[in-house]
Length: 315
Image (cartoon, rainbow, N blue to C red; front, side):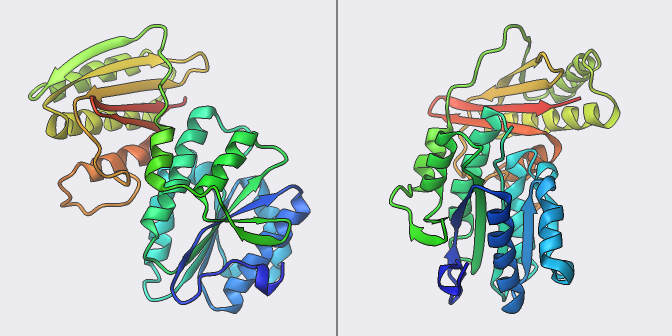
């Protein structure tokens, strides 16, 4: 990749290209060159990609790899709703310097639900980093991913790096529109445990949810994390969702436990829960952020008639 073809944040601008790659060699060459350019420019560099890519990138960078911060995206981004705050945390450590980030939130094997939330994440990067000097390169394996995923990458990235050429994407779409398109109907479960609640019943809901969770295959900390997430979601629902709501609980064939919270609320800020908020935030964003950190997947559907959260936890 030549200097002219390498995307970078110049003059404090935000740059967000998608990298379409087809082979491991192309991947390592392009991402490696991107990281080396960051180090040559004394720009902090964070690389969050699926774990099986990390060894190849580390080998390609050699001694320079010690100057790059790496993360396994299958861990960091198991829940796509966690990724954005991690990228912001990295950038915030260098408030007066442009940063370079590689983030690969979608890989072969992701479920449809995960892909929708990862696509939402990619759109929201443009909102969250709009005024930040940063370059965030997002690789997509076009040889393995569904065509629809690649099409969406063209909608969530202002530019596309493909075959050594970095060109504007004519399909780039306003993040709010993309997020709206991600609000697809959630599939209905076959059978659920259903609870209704209102203010003053939070302790009772927690006890009933815990009793249900003990019938699942969740153990120890995993079960505790889900109950804490449910408690936060129900508390937010009472405080910001009209004072009452419905909790449904069920498991899937693979043992995943799912809790769904529905109320009459409305999510005004699409970044709520995905960006870290202050402890004094009064819009429920801190509780949503905690829920994202605790769960394996959080699906959010905001409609004119109410708000739905689905919390997934695997055993």
